[in-house]
Image (cartoon, rainbow, N blue to C red; front, side, top):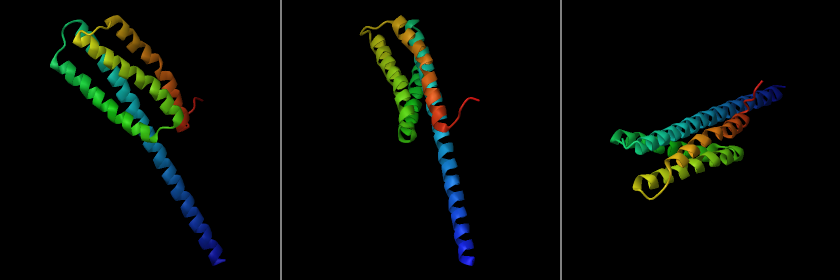
Length: 148
């Protein structure tokens, strides 16, 4: 009888530990998703601001600092997300991050005078906003968050 009681207590302790580990992993993933989502949005806004400052011939060092700070934060968040995100989330992230990488390259070409169109880049940055819906939905599903 004592042995059965001890085994039951061990099982319960393992189940509690497993549940705690699972909750901690979910909380870490949620925090990662919040960070990657907010940093990518900040980077998109920074690209838009930089593009407008470039177009209006008022680009300052503060604009560059903000632009590259957003890029660094985005790169760090992306690196973390690539380690914890589900395949479905990674696939949706690729759409956004590919678009941000392409617009970065196009902005830098425009800045160097190697071609490019302010209006086309601006349009593509605005269109990226709509693509966040798929990413948000994939993150919510991965976290088990559903609309009621």
